[in-house]
Amino acid sequence: MNRAIGALAGAMAGALLMFGALAARAEDLSKPMLLVASPSLQGPYTHTALLVVPMGNKHVGFILNRSTETRMSSAFPEHAPSAKVMDPIYFGGPEASDALFALLPRDPVARAEARMIEDVCDTLYEAINWGLGEIGWFKRAEGRLADDMKAKAASQTRQLVDWLESKLLGKTWFGGEFGWADLSVAPYLNRSVHYGIGPAEGSPLKAWHKRLCERPSVAATFKEFDAARQGMANVAERLAAGTFRREYRDHRLEWMMKSGGVQIVLDGLAKNNIRFTWPL
Image 1 (cartoon, rainbow, N blue to C red):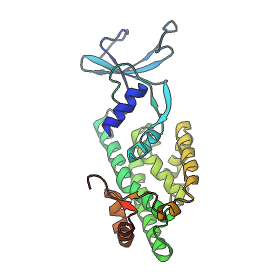
Image 2 (cartoon, rainbow, N blue to C red):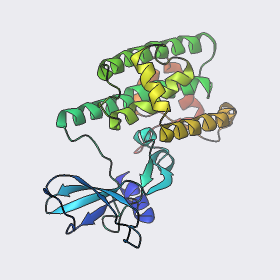
Image 3 (cartoon, rainbow, N blue to C red):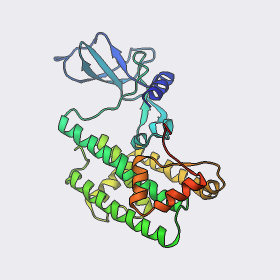
């Protein structure tokens, strides 16, 4: 995955700008700062705003206003964590072009909290949404079994929503300011809303979701999801015809087994329309 990210970043110069020396007037070069290109600057960095962060005896610069049209979710569709990144990949500089960087809170406690929320959403929450897709879109279960598994998923989602409410703790955003934890929750909670099992009306998490949808980059990504699900109409027929197989990996397989889908797994193996991760 890291090699793939590096290859993409190198191809589109979507990484970071590393400075050996910083020609800027500042009281303390050991602290992050914001640099704005002077009107007279010409070339590839004209009209740029740069967040500069010290790194050893150098400085790393992140261009804030030179976005591309590519998002992580479209660049790496098979990588679940990439689905949460709503904002586009940003153009960087000529050095370290084989890397792609994400910004996390400086405070170690806030950073740990954001990563914990990310991990829960990328594993436990993602598995529930995936399982509902297997039932609803791919018709893995019907009748009583489908109803029972959907009820189980709804119960599990309520537990996760309650847990997320406890992490929000009355704040506007999970980290105080809009950041990585919010991006981690966004696609999964929004899909729960799509399934009709999102947070209750009037709850803090419902208000958070409303604020989230008001952000242009998030609204654009959710619109892409709405458009993509329109293409899921005939996927069950394509699966039955053997045109592809679905991956049942780690947390997804666990969800299926613990939520009443043991026979679904056995049938999928018999029909050869499920697969596991490499190495096999």
